[in-house]
Length: 398
Image 1 (cartoon, rainbow, N blue to C red):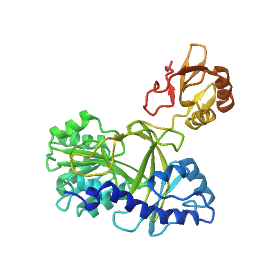
Image 2 (cartoon, helix red, strand yellow):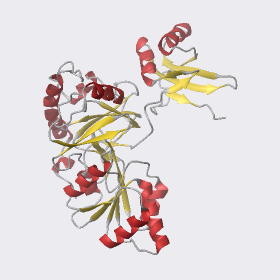
Image 3 (cartoon, rainbow, N blue to C red):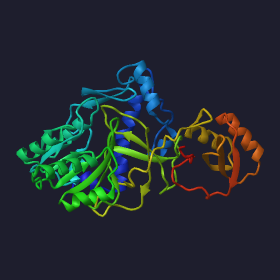
Image 4 (cartoon, one colour):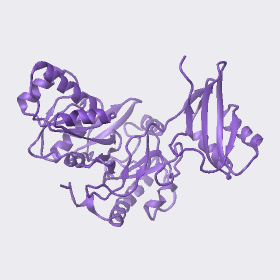
């Protein structure tokens, strides 16, 4: 049932092992000639991670431009290079299941008896290679279909005896609908491993009605596999090869348990160590463990984007600026910007959870930090929703 013993170990054993892997990676990062990832202070436990800086894609792209292709990060065993929009370059390694998606395919019930139709792209971005190496790791055969040419996909699935699908959640539906139109029976497909888009309940149920169990995972081109659904579909279980933090958007400060925040990932991949990498996605930690017996932390899945940069009166306001505003005033616990339009122009209201009452001081700070004037609203601590939103744009399109 389980991919390996790591999935059922105790929390203490997991933390000790991850810390043992992390410390030499930090030493390697410190030794970089251009020191693009400054690591200050000693890390004695995973709880010390917030002392380290956050790595954002904008910084990664800048470092890569200065020292191509990987910004001076120490890389080894690299056999492929991919490109994502930005451009940002990602390595692909030569060791088995380098991106670690095999754990997900195993949880989806895919194994040596399966033929996987891999419809993820093999061009520029690594998704196709990620899932092919994962299928190899669980012993399955792969049809490297890539996206598109749906009629040919149907014909190949029938001829090859495909039993499992890998791709975006919606494309499987397109394949099955085309098969229906062609009068072709693809009922041998009973498993689906999806990512790269939302899996809506109605879509999952439509697949279930066809006898297909569809599970989803979460990963990025930069750090690989992050989290996955088990057979009980009760949240996403963190991968064993990453350390995940949920922080206030625009900062590196952890949120309270259960609150929505930005996902930071520290990859324990020795070939390409990324420390506190900001995915730009929002999620939250779920309490307890999965009913399937896997003991790692669960997250709630995708809850939106943390990059809530919004243009107001021709100027961008970013979550980092909201964080700087809060840092200026120790008595301010949290802030939220709401942008609207009054029929004449943009309006901005900044709501502060604070014990203070100096509206004029806060208004002046807003102008200094955000370069815009705003209405200031003061509310008691605990009033603002813990949904990860720090900039809310409620303007209606006209």
